[in-house]
Image (cartoon, rainbow, N blue to C red):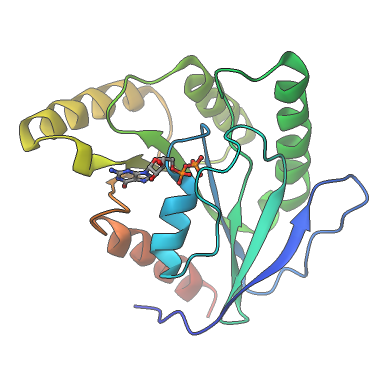
Length: 199
Ligand code: GDP
């Protein structure tokens, strides 16, 4: 298990002229619909409040690089699919994320795709998964906010997601709760294993 000794915001990418940071030992990216619980998950994984929870949902169009132990990055990608987003915002999201995939997939060890465990897969999630398939990126799916479900509801949702996600190439499905700190260890296992591959 990796001990988080040091976290810093190493880079924020917003404009085309903004430069990606040096690759170091690689990066682990987090993507999902806005409000899926991405900031809370990043904070739970890092054990620190580094990402902003729920400020202006759907408005952040930046990529934040959190440097961990001066060795690797957790990358906070902008959220998509916010109900009140305009077409222009959606295009802006696509432009930012396209640039990310084009320029950084080579340094990305794992993409964690976050999906709210309580709902059905939404069209924007499906679109992302199809796009990842085309790009040859196999994500780890993180089902968020499982503390909001009873154990029988959770079982039902797990079956639903296993079934519906079986048509995509996915590494694994990790049910998580940032609130109850469940599933966080499994995320660290993925990160540790990937980092070990390069040593
Ligand atoms: P983001 O927009 O994807 O970054 O989502 P946030 O992390 O800002 O979370 C959106 C909302 O969901 C906030 O009100 C959080 O408190 C709540 N939330 C996030 N994760 C969890 C969780 O694991 N359990 C519960 N019960 N609520 C959560």
